[in-house]
Structure formats: structure tokens, C-alpha cells
Image 1: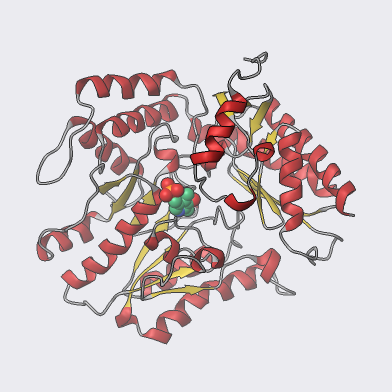
Image 2: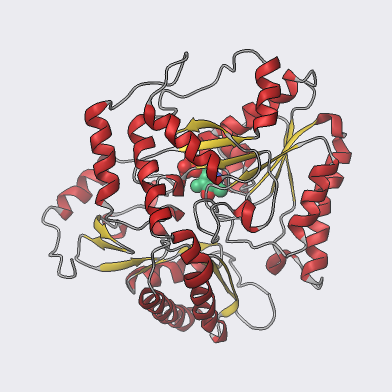
Length: 457
Ligand SMILES: *Cc1c(COP(=O)(O)O)cnc(C)c1O
């Protein structure tokens, strides 16, 4: 695959694309043919574009191709399922083998008693399910006034109305509103940007206690749930100070509210455990998941709910009028089952925890000496590099957000996919990335930092 020739129809495809395809998360008004990247194939940790460039995918697609590209086994499992029973729904008491097996498998991997699995088609609609379950659960218990969900600023929970409203992205809130009522946001545990002169651990405690203050502000009798990512991904790989999660868990336990961990990124090995909740010793009542569940070979999401609470809900709420045509889609479930089988067979979760994450941490950290780098932080196979004009001050570039984009474009030109979140470069490579590929990632990142520094200093 190293010598992939130029893609024959690239220009024609780009023209057709420009004419009719409305890209996700793209400024269509300024998109031109020169900026389009046509991706043609992929293998392991690499992708190829139509010019024949081999590019290291430091993002595993969109934080999702955990087992890497080119897993024919998953394609075969989905294909076999499509031939046997391509589709049947899970509405009105129907079921099929792959959905039953996958529910059992997920229940065996989630922490605590999160053994009741509702299937969705993505992370966004999993969080819609979370919102509906949380409110319906309390209504079923005779507390219909518990409707408020507390989320965090700069969180990402998806792109449906519930996903956008639960998320804390101002730019997303500014489009397509009004948003869903009774969803409120507290400050995030982002020490690097918002910690000022505070000690990180003190800052972590303060941001955790914002949850308590918000609960008291409305009254516990109004709060249905708190939702948060163990580590904020799209917000910029924000790794909370160690003090943060234990304090949040204390508050959640003392209060009569549900805690939902959005594990769409942190689940399925990303942090060296099956779930980020295990890594941080959280005890959520609900986990939403997607991405790594199928390593993105087919779209599927799920919500795992506490069995004890589910039983309460089943006993009181009657029929839950909720579900998607593709909830528990058999071919997607078959792909997810095979994906999980691969993760187990190859010991990828343990590989991340015991072997490759420590190497990733050590090697990415070597970039901290670069003049444009203010901080390098990692956890599992998530990493972030903060770009700043002068160290050790945490002052930002003027036009905050533009230098990250410059660096991202240099990365791509240097054969590396990293994503820019404002002026942080983030990465989330496939769990199968090798030590040599990490060297490649760091070398290409350093070259891109050099190119960026030369351009902006
Ligand atoms: C990607 C993501 C989502 C949304 O998932 P989609 O499959 O894109 O709908 C939700 N939450 C988190 C934490 C995510 O990273």
C-alpha cells in the first residue's frame, strides 16, 4: 500500500462533491476544490489520499477507529449478518441474536450494575436517549419536577438538539435554537486556560463544587441528572485535576440525582480500561457510548443504565415511547461484537494501559521543549499540545484559535492528522498504534510545530 498510485477520478469526484455534498462541520461558503481532501483507503494507523500521500491518522478518524483500519473480520461479520438477516427491528417485543449477544457483552464490560442496554445509532442520539430516560425515570417515581440536567461548558455531547443543548459549545448553541429547556451548564475543570494562579488541585475542587452550587441554586428536587465526559474530548482533551472526580462523585452520591458518563470517546480502551469510569473509579448510573463500540466500521451507539434503576422504571413508567428504526440494527451489532472480540483477543485494553500509553506519554512529552508549546498532557491514548506565544506564561496568541488551524494544516501537509481545538493540538490514535508509529507521529508533529512557529513568531 506504500506505492498507492494517484487516484484516477479524483478531480471528477471533487467536482461532483463540491456541487452536491453538504459537508458536516464545514464552512461551505469558502470551501474550494484545492482544500478538499479525498481519502481513498486506509490500513492500520494510516490513511491514503487521492494524491497518493500516506498519512498517519493521529485521530483514529474522529476518535473512533480503535482497532485500526483494514479489519476484514469485521467486514466479514457484517456481511455474513447481512446475508442471514440484514435488518429487523427491536420494537414491539421483537429481537434477534446479535442484539441479545451484544447487550450481554456490553453489560459484562460496564462497571457496577449498568446491565440494561438501550441501543441507538450514534453518540448524539444516545445522549437524546439519556435525556429522555433521566426525565422519564423521575416522572415514573412520582417526581416529574426533576427535569433539569446539569452539563458543562465546552462539553461535547453531539449534534442533535439534545446533543447540542447538553453540550457546552457556544458556537453550536448560537445556531438552530431555541435550545431544549431545563439544561444548564457549569464551568469546566480546564486548569490550563481557566486556572489562573490557583493550584491545579484546588482549582479542580472548586470546579467540582460548582456542581453542588448549581444543584442548590435550583433545589435538589428539580435536578434530574449531571452529564459529563470523563475527559472532555472535542473540547480539547481536558484532563481534570486529580481532585475533580472524587469530589464530583461525593456530590452525586449525597444528592438524589443521576450521573451519566458520556463515554463516547473514553470507552472501549481509549484510557486503558474498558471505560473511563473504571479508570477514574466513577460510579455512573448511565453510560452513553458509540465510536469505539464498533470502531466506526458501522454506526451504532448504546446507553447502559443501572439495572436497579431500570427495574424501578419498568415497574412504574409503563411503555417507554422511545426507539430508533435502527436501534439494535443486526448488522451493526454483528460488527460491534466482532470489534469487541478483536479488542479482547489482542488484549488491546491492557496493551494501552501497560505498554503503549506510557510510551505515548513519554514521547509526546518530548515536544514540551518546543518554543511554541506551553504544555503537553496525555491520558491513555488521548493527548493535547497547548500552543502559546511565550512560555512559561499561559497567555494566548492574539486571535485565539487561528494558530491551531495553521498548525493543523501543517500537520496534514507533513503527513499527520491531528485536530486543532482553538490553539490546542489534540490526538487520539488507534489503540494498535506501534512504537515506531508513535515516533513517526512525534517527528511529524515536531516538524509541524517548527513550520507553525516559523510562520507566527
Ligand atoms: C462524538 C461524540 C458524541 C457524538 O457522537 P456522534 O456519533 O457523532 O453522534 C457524543 N459525545 C461525545 C463525548 C463525543 O465525542
